[in-house]
Length: 190
Ligand code: SF4
Image (cartoon, rainbow, N blue to C red; front, side):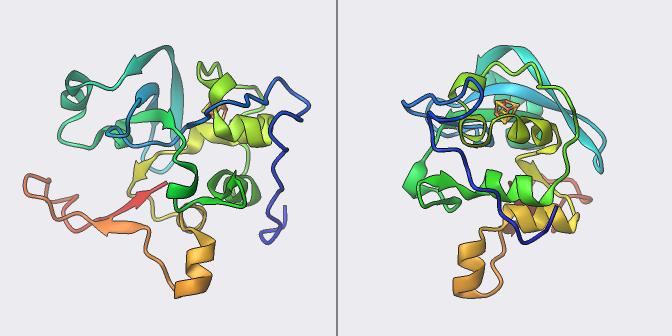
């Protein structure tokens, strides 16, 4: 697939699959402190080849879940869904999520079967791109330390890159309490 071809999303409600939920859609790569956040997957696999396992039960984010993931952040361990922020999100342009469009343009599918995912009907990625989003979804880790150039490219809002030059969608970990290996690492927010 060409690295410059960004797939166009389906108009919501006009996909060939059972997508098209016209009400509020959920972002499937949300942060734990977003209102209405709920965990629907857990990151397994390895650091270089992560693989999300989709939970049999959606778990509303709670302090207990946050504590379970310490010392790392919940978004490194869980895939979390929350109502899509639309225009308030750096990835949202022209009425669509550009993050999932870049994901499909630059990342290869990692499965040939639809994951058993409980948020599908309300997932923005599914509603915009159907199964092509789902085939790539298991490799997504919301907060990661990946050095994979494609992951960094996909996670970086391109309109901002064009407007402002290089945009670091990353943050240097300096928080007290971090392990030496993580301190000063670059965290990518997918
Ligand atoms: S893209 Fe597919 S697998 Fe991923 S969260 Fe959305 S519905 Fe689930």
